[in-house]
Image (tube, rainbow, N blue to C red; front, side, top):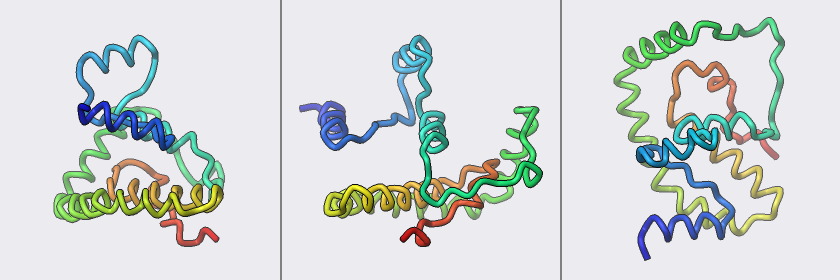
Length: 149
């Protein structure tokens, strides 16, 4: 069985969504036809759509929304370039986190439904922080999930 087919089969059996970070041209075209997001856009969409157990809403006056997308993108790229040393350490932490993924999946199978959801929230938060996506104002507000009972 091909690796891709095996991975897809495993994801279906374990109720995971597979997100391809570097999609082929065919996948991009198919997603555009179906008005679906793919890659990092899909990850962001899923994280934003999830109802987090430790969610604390902000006051409307505490943040400003980005009206000019190019300006915000430029600010994000500038801050990303300024933190090149951090990127090296973040790629190391991302690699370490990814290597721990199989043990995380094995551990999550031993948990009850609610515990599994809380554990998943903790892991997604750690994964999201390890990616160090610049320009995301809510990234600094994410807890590591250790405050979840």
